[in-house]
Length: 301
Image (cartoon, rainbow, N blue to C red):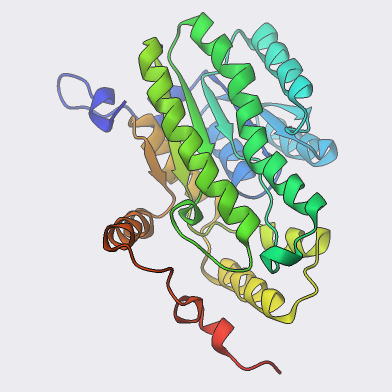
């Protein structure tokens, strides 16, 4: 679908409330960061939202807060790396609510350090959550969406990192490139089925969250340069990152309009795509990271 597909004959563009109010949404990684932003905004639009997260306590807290404000939300504790658990979740949601109108595959984690020093267990964890988690949700939800035969949306979280390369966070960058490729292929496959399912690639730029702090807490790199890069990213995220709910509002409006490319920051998102296209066309070597990240050029203290 393109944006025009959501316009009426009079040129009216369907608003997010018009399209989604009264429907059911499920957001993985929905208890924090960008995921929580989606959850809170979708609930405010009048959707019933399933807050799917590996942290059941946090999911219950977010869902409870939404219910206290008059919204509809259900917490669901799930590990998206467990294919059977994801399938049980899909069965539960379809049995309980009759379907899903918007599936947001958001669950993801970061990791820092030199590629050759990343522990194998951490590499596999990042791949399992960020890539396998999306696959498991597609595998469990899309067949049910196709069978239901009603309009629905699958929105997969890549990142502007999915069209860039960044040193010292290679596992994350690899997964976001993979999710983008998966999403483009999924769009093509859905088009072959004729099912009324919109597929979106969501490329946030900088949305306030704890992703860098959580990565350093869960898997500290132990390397001064990697720590310095992540610290600078965290500082920038706090200083200029978008509010998660405001970012979600902007992105959901784009989804409602029928877009494939969904950005939290239109200017930075389109600039990232343009830069990548120009770089590939020129067949240039990867850029010197010290030119992109000045903190990497600073002498060690």
